[in-house]
Amino acid sequence: MVSLTLDAHQDESRRAQREADRWLIAGTILMGTLVLGPVGLPVFCRGVYLLRRAQQVGLSVRPMMVTLIGYVVILDAAINSIGWGLDVFANHALITRTIFTAWGNLMDGGYFWHYNELWIGGAGAPGEKAWIIVCIVVVFPMRIAAAIGLLQMKRWGHQWTIVTCWFGVISWMGYILNMTMYADVRYAGVALPVIGWWLYNIFYITPFLAIPYLHTVNREIFSD
Amino acid sequence: MNEQDRRRRRALIAFQIFIYGALLAMFLIQLQMLMVKDW
View 1 (tube, one colour):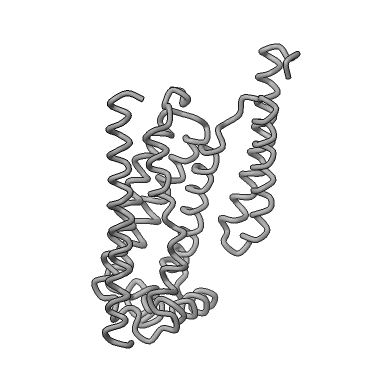
View 2 (tube, rainbow over the protein chains, first blue to last red; view 1 turned 90 degrees about the horizontal axis):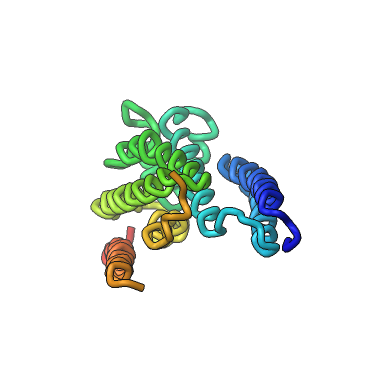
């Protein structure tokens, strides 16, 4: 690397970044479909490996923490959009009626009792539909757009990822407060009440995890 | 680290304690409800 000129170093860095991003984007798209998650994970991991190797040989590539936050935000929003999108727009499809009510029967009665009995269909738990719609129509698209800007190392991407991470705080707190208010009704008769739901959903806390990093990172690394 | 950074870090730690505390509180409320009355 020492023998490279500045221009050659920049070209090589850009090439390495693009190569790693190809794997990272393909892996995220595959995992974002939910069902192809096991296929997407190794593809994504190869992208992380390529990025790490480029960093180790001294190329100027995107910091690992920015990369992970950006792609995890996109993945989280995509997975939830697919699941909840099916609940809103395809709630009478056989696959939705089978998988959602089975899952609901296992750990969240909000997706079992009175499923498809509201005029809009899908989950019938009090307040659930409002959170679903505000998340898939407002929160998740904005989070994906912001994360793309963050991955491009743009100043607006950094700022809007911060803003939408705070959206995440509001939506998570609101959602959990809502379900806790009638938890005895919502969990009634399911196989794994309370513990099952928390074990499954604790992994969606990424909005909170990213906030300290985003507020303390040197913002000069993001360009206008 | 200057004074502003120190204050920012303190605020972020307080926020983290608050937000995870709130989540834990909701979990414990649900658990308590479950134990009081078997569903």
